[in-house]
Amino acid sequence: ISCLLDLKPNFTSPPPTSMAAGPDAYLQGNIRMTLEDPELWKSFHEIGTEMIITKPGRRMFPHCKVNISGLIPCAKYILLVDMVPEDGFRYKWNKDKWEVAGKAEPQPPCRTYLHPDSPAPGSHWMKQSVSFLKLKLTNNTLDQHGHIILHSMHRYYPRFHIVQADDLFSVRWSVFQTFTFPETSFTAVTAYQNTKITKLKIDHNPFAKGFRDEGTNKKRRANKSPDSADKKTKMTDMLARDSEEDIQQDFCRQSFEVFDGEEVDKRKEGDPVKEESYSPWAADREQSVRTESPNGTDTRDMYNTEQLVPAPASYQPYRFHEYSGKSPSPSSSASRSSVGSGRFEPRVPDVATVPEHDSSKAARPQDMVASSSSCVPQNLPQDYTGVLNMTMAQAGKPGVIGHPIYNPYGTAEQPLAQWSNAAPSQYPAPHHLTADYPTQAVHPGYHHSNMAEWSQYPLFSYSCW
DNA sequence: TCATCTCTCACATTTGAAGCGC
DNA sequence: AGCGCTTCAAATGTGAGAGATG
Image 1 (cartoon, rainbow, N blue to C red):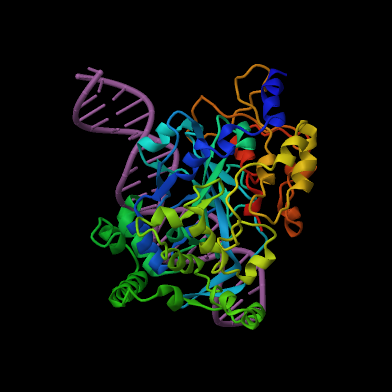
Image 2 (tube, rainbow, N blue to C red):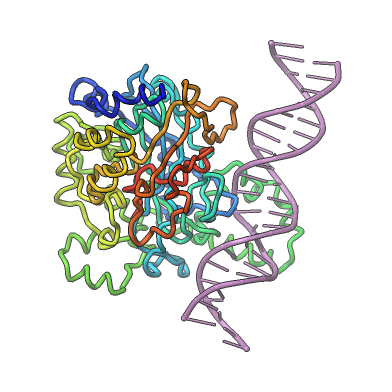
């Protein structure tokens, strides 16, 4: 009860200061995130990054590591990562290049990875780089460990969210800053397709040291049958030849063939911008656009930012220009029901606040259903229905049922709390995807006892398509 | 039936955390 | 408390083979 009392102001009063225009909002707009080890990421990206997905879950390599600045040192923040489909296609590896192999499979259950340090003060996030090493990818749609579920042979990119919130409950009202990095896009695979990627992984991943040419795997190779040794030799030769190739050339065009299916034809009939935007390598395209930043300074973190919060006026015109005219709108996006499903949806002015009408309608928890399912257009970037879905309370507070939340570090301390009383319409899955969502997701009163369960539900519904 | 594509599994190897004794 | 050693779980790509598909 005390929990509800504590929360009531949040439902009835205007959003916290961070949501209103003012100094705080300005600070939010100054939040910067830079990708650590960008050169490594680029070296992978130039070839076409592949990430292994397995049933038990596989870490990413390179793993996501970012530096953050511009946070309010004493304010608490939550960091999240989700994976967004880059387009609406399935790919196949044909000899030495990726080709579109048809339409994408229905999106698996959307999951969001919560950084285990969350929530933590801004000073904590800024004092050192933030690693998402523990993040795992899986192709097991029934995964119970909270790993991010992806489809093999589909392209994705990680999306980082910074939320100013004391706890997961506060996310309901909090300011979101979303960042993406073009060079982190990847193809999910169950086995490596591109030998160049394999070689890069072996060369840079410490755990794969045993497979390095100069490594101690000679003994291992000596035990191989002549057949496999022969294969290995062939592969080595191929790699050698590969390395001689001009890596500078535009791999995006070299390695991906345009899908010559029906949809492409339709697109070709459309406006030329859309046609141009059709390349599977949206990230590169986007980067090329983004590098037109007039700032002339470090554009990396600038063009990687998908701000969803009020931003400094000086910042918005560029963004608006950036996404309005040139923002390609792949036909694939037409099949996606919501925003944020791709990076090219036209951005509307950055607004991270929950619309006021929502605030009022959500005055009573039971009303949140209506507000989330009917009042917020799902095809707008500010679709915060996913956020509105959250009904959480701080663990340890009086009157709060302290369902521990999954923590990859497995510490006894569980700073975050529960979901509760999720009503059916609180999980408004896209029509064609409804069946893909766990049944629990639409079970009223279902309590999620840990993060593994919690993460099965889309924190950001707009990430689904 | 066959070829191809995709996925799974056991394996050898490395890393790094934890436990232990000094 | 700090150091060095051992143990063991986890992470990694390999390659064979199973299963699905056309």
